[in-house]
Amino acid sequence: MDEVILHKYGFFDSFNSLAFEDKKIVHDFNWGNRNKELIVYCIKHFGLNKDMITAINDSLTTSYPPFRLRKELENFYQDNPEQLDEHIKVSKDNSLNIPEALDELHLQVCGQE
Image (tube, rainbow, N blue to C red; front, side):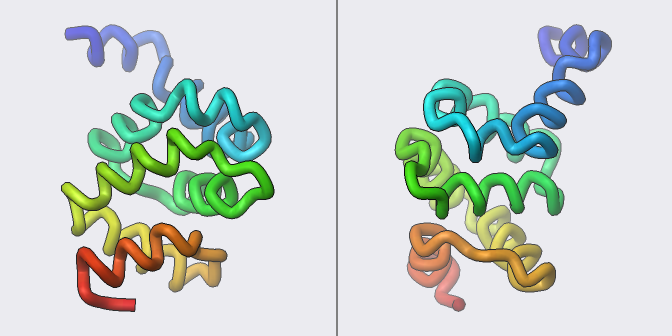
């Protein structure tokens, strides 16, 4: 029910725009860490897209990556290897910089580079 209400009022569109299109998770260490569960929720319920993957990759390869977000993503991807595989595939297909932590996790979980 909560998700329906949030959709109705455009919360997820606004969050997607702020977090991924505007790259708030890249430029604000604390914001990325504070919103780690919501970021994973969006991946889980709405799937990955290029904007999300670009922002996630950039946030994890910046000088000060949000370490709590990184850990949350690693845990999620470990439990959802098909999502990790998609993340890596889209990154490679679009010549995006793949974070070392996700590349190593992909090798462990999916047995691929």
